[in-house]
Each structure stands twice: as structure tokens, then as C-alpha cells.
Length: 199
Image (cartoon, rainbow, N blue to C red; front, side, top):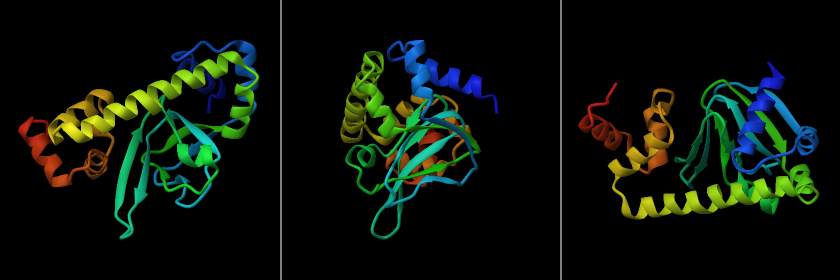
């Protein structure tokens, strides 16, 4: 693996929210760990305490949870240049109700959350990134998704999905997409057929 290339990719992702200085990034790298993850491998299991934020250099992850009957529901799908984590578990240090699984062979950078939070308190540029990331992804985007589930029909939700993740449907099994959208695979197949984009 070309470590330098992947860490440059991470820095570019950070800078897309707020500029990170060379000094800060060098300290930040001290608790970042590059690793390969096989398709089907879990980065976090139900009931584990989350310790890392996962930056995706290459590949595809999903976060999912199980109901009392062990039915699986996809909360999110994440591809290259996205960050994935069980946020509630990281913040509360409680056991996670989410699982994180690789849907493809992937390369990720694991960011130690405790070390990250400690550095935020020392580095203003990293704190600015943290605030802007939270505002965009944990507040603005989260509210948009919640409103979409409340007011949009399944077709509109699907169109929003493929706009946000171009070409991802060629990489993900249809039942994973359907679960993420809160519909059945049959419903998704009908939507795709009506749009003439069935495989």
C-alpha cells in the first residue's frame, strides 16, 4: 500500500471542510492507522465499544443494525473519501447498536477517536474542521434525510441516493440499497424498471 498517497487523500478530505496545517496533520497522523479490510469483514460488531472513525481510501462500507427478530437495516452506505463510525458509541463510550461491514475489499484509515478529541482541544484548525464536519453531516445532512423519509416517496429517495452516490448502484447489491432507502427489493426493482435502468 502507498501510505503517502492514502494519507494525502485523507488530508484532502479534511481540507475540504477546513484547512489543516502541516504541523497539525503530522500530529494527527500519529494516531491514524492504515489497514486493508476484506469484503464481508466487520470493522465494528453489535455490542462493541467504538474506538475509531474509519476514513475510506478505497472500497465501500455499510453501517447497519438488527431488530429483535434479527432483521437487518442499513443505516448508511459509505464509499471513497467518506468517514464512517458509530457516532453515538464514540461520544458516549457505550456499546454500539450499529455494526460496520465492508461490502468490498477496502483500504481504510482508522482514526483513534480519543486521541483525535484530545488534539482538537490543542489545535484550532482541527477544531474548526470538527465543527464544520458536524454541522454538515450530523446536523444539516441528517435533517435532510429525516425530512426526505417523512415527505418524499420511494422514487424521490432513490433519485436523491443515486445523485449523492454516483455509480454506487453498480457496486452494491440491490437489497442493500433497498434496506438503506426503507423499501423492499421488489419496490426498488419496480422503481428502477420504471426509470429504465434495470441491469
